[in-house]
Length: 640
Image (cartoon, rainbow, N blue to C red):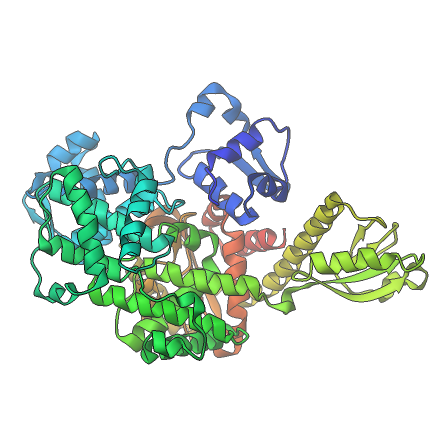
């Protein structure tokens, strides 16, 4: 469940000194990664951090405890430029005629040069929706189809409150007397009357389209007649749309034309189903969905396994993805968008899983010959992430030696409980009595012992009492997680130093846009023998699927194929930020992977995003003016 970032401030407010990251995460009921992301949001755009972070954990900055500090709590995680760009978009999309940029200046209390800069952001964001800005001197307007404008509105609504299934409701968008819950119940009931089923995301998508439809019609804008929608007239989705529109029309005293009903029926058809897929199996799946969808899912899964060195996915995963691909292709055929209100959270909190989903989406997109949106990519990330969470790799288990003092074999109760509790994160390689223990012969990460014993090297001692309590299990969990982090850090330290080279480091090297900088960095790596001519196109293809920028001032462009001649990291540190997708970035790391290092990509990517999820780390690295200082600071952060 999502947490209001300001709850972190409440949790830290009465604490003296540092609060351990795990302790803070447990108190809020979230993961440590989520805590880092929320701390970044709280600190974003400030001259000095509101929440300070270090290897000790987190603490509230001393200035924040003052009354004026509390008053400065952030109301939005967006930068001011992003908020203005969204405000301009909302203004433009509500108008049927041009507006003067000078009127926008007056409304937003900024100069015309600031508005011109914001318009560049607007053009970039609407390009993905087949929209453009039409301009005649100082007057501008949004140019494009009504369907494209509604897709854009849906995107704006869902990204405002990314933590809620009913994100539109939190922004005050209501339909008459219906609140978010009542509207969802109404839609679900009308679908059920026609024998249709949908999940929470599907209901949310229909509700958002319905809210947009009513709002646009009340402002005199409606969908044009389209002969292609005639094919839905005899469907259950059309009957459900008629039932919903009848109820809405009465509340708003609207006359809803058939073009709107038909379009809503397409939305319903692509976000619902008449069959109950919960009973689907390998034997009956082909009778429920097209064989093409099953083949697409299997081909994309095989490609993902090969690209990321994953163990083969099971048949249940392929079956679930095939069902999703079936609905996905229906949405694309009907030209309706799928809004995923958790897109930003998935992309920032689980960057490696999201990257796998991008690869997965590209495989489907190329095979089916259709483009996939970021919202669709995020849904695929659900499938990939859930599977990997359930079937995590055993190679990352922390190793342990278990020592005991034998008394009627009672130690087995403790041993069995530890094995069961931590079966997905711990591997006990040796069980032996303390009388046989020799510290110099033990090479495991952890030694569990009922009493203090000496350990050698980097081995960690964890004293375990004979009778375990819940707090003892919490201590063991923290020790295992800390050791796992150290193991990853040591492996990443070795790997990253092999990828870094002084020849590919630049300070204060900017470009007009992300594509230009990618081309320049790729050309430099090609000229120095690290990559071949096709590398730049592969990186740009990945970037086109979803920008590789993060909200913490970092961009990590890379290819989805292992095509570099030699693995490398091309580094750019900038004092001034540049726009990259939806964010501004100061640190750019262009990654190239050679075929022999394909297996290393997961570790390298995950390690970098783990360390650089802290905006403070990114800004410290961004200020490095030499390769030596950059490498030293990055290594310190990784091994911390």
